[in-house]
Image 1 (cartoon, rainbow, N blue to C red):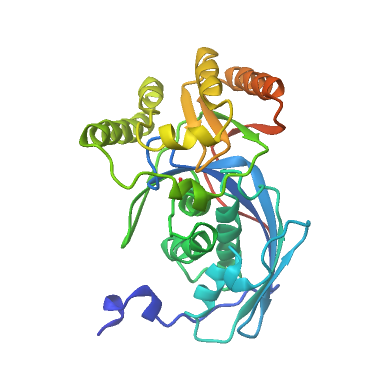
Image 2 (cartoon, rainbow, N blue to C red):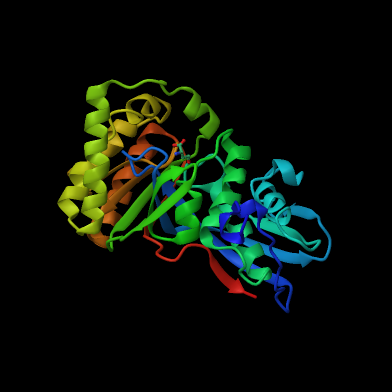
Length: 326
Ligand code: HSE
């Protein structure tokens, strides 16, 4: 078998270690699904971000520290940053390890890609320390092991945009086929009601079968959304932000969801819906002024309902995980 025929995991990977042996990265939040594209579309955000510090070890070992009190598992195999790094060091031909400190700013269970930020941040940082020997596609392959730890299944619609930046289409995960989609300059408003929805639970409640008429409507919307992004056709994007399969089931877990969606659109948002598996809700707007009005609408609704929340007004992050200090 020649080298080109080998599976990625059968390749011999010789690191070209960074001189400092230390890197600090900013790992961004992401909006998975983008309403109609369950498990196949995702978008990277400029806010919020996790901060991660990663140190190179000259032995085959992963050490995880949580810097700010979140009860993240310290067993690397159970940690969303640790599991991808275990996969990565198993493919190296020299004994290598990493000591990771996670400053978690993206609350777990928020629907803004908290587990993905840890997984993607860890693999991008580690790859930097190895001399960037792995291409982004391999980093996504490793990072998906973190998603498996978090939600029981591999999905790439948070980790791929977190690593590639912008908007990504994951046409397939077996084999991995990731397509970067051009992202228009839109504003994103997010409300995170302070309730926790575990991705594992939000997946378990989904119906396993869909009606053909719903599937037709959904794939029309996915194609419309991708075409809308590619042509920067904001009206088409707005029309295509419709989910007839997942949202009707999951939205019952999110108090105020229907009202938020209706009122934000009345205020001028192009459209939006559940961010990932929830409970966060995101809305896209053409103008920053509209995105700020949308934020006020969201705040008013949750103030009235009496649920604490965080809101963000941000933009699409086109570059993904960022190396801050090396
Ligand atoms: N596509 C995944 C889901 C994303 O909706 O379950 C989880 O953040």
